[in-house]
Image (cartoon, rainbow, N blue to C red; front, side, top):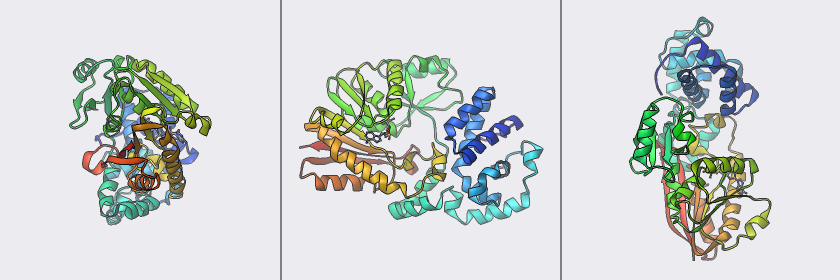
Length: 403
Ligand SMILES: C[S@@+](CC[C@H](N)C(=O)[O-])C[C@H]1O[C@@H](n2cnc3c(N)ncnc32)[C@H](O)[C@@H]1O
């Protein structure tokens, strides 16, 4: 988290965004976009606001505790939350209206109480704390703390258009500094402020924003130019575009999803990236899958999941989701693995991936599938990306071979 005091105007915008998220259930990205559309402001102010909103949402329960309001009523105490946030980070209070809500002594007392409750201090809701403890045991506190940190900005070099050095040089000319990420070829960490999406390099399709951990998934599938590849849960195509680059644009890459609007988005991104071998295809029924039986050399199943590994990027989800969603997801993941795996040719390979840290969604799913598939698949390798150990988002990937 960078340290600066919010200006009164920035504070007003933070308040408007938090009110929309907490009172109107607006997704945080949409609330931010709407605020920036209505209120014109310099890029640095926008970055301050995005940082502040993210940080406040990551530790919403802590701020509510400090403000002495029930979490369920956080939405009607937004000014007070902003005030506590300033005190927590030792920043000058931006304006009198917010300062009215603060009492330094009460704050200090409650901060000491909060420090004694590690889950609260790390901004973790009770349902998630129970789930984390139960699923990850001793590993959980370190992961929980890592998931409270601000997410770093990473981009992926689009090797269909340029290489790492060329991209770094071009971005530098557009006043964006980057550095290579150890262990993740093609990933750059963005170390300066400034909007990436306004750069000409972005408009020309030289890079995509993508977490460094996420960039490890497409290479795990071992695709080669000329192969027939299916990305069956492609969404808006973050990993599809990476696969296309690894295939050097040669071969056939089918990008499938159950949501047409995501595939429409993917089409636009593919055009910008110069990835011409991608064919988006909507999954309309189970027939769409059956027709592709034994047709793929490689299959990526980046299945819908709890998203626990990326919660620092989507902190509002912590306050909306509950543990009750998990069994439904587990059922869907098992169903996708069972039915979609039939699209792999004999001798072909598939990667099952999630952005979750929970063994129930990861190792347990794969182990059960292997057990039940009558020897049709063998697990070749699996890898977990731990936010605590890497600073990246959290992911899991398993490479399976069809026998
Ligand atoms: C984790 S997201 C995929 C993210 C994407 N691969 C990327 O890298 O940007 C999971 C996707 O699965 C899709 N999905 C949900 N149910 C599905 C199903 N039964 N078959 C295929 N895709 C499904 C969702 O719409 C969502 O886009």
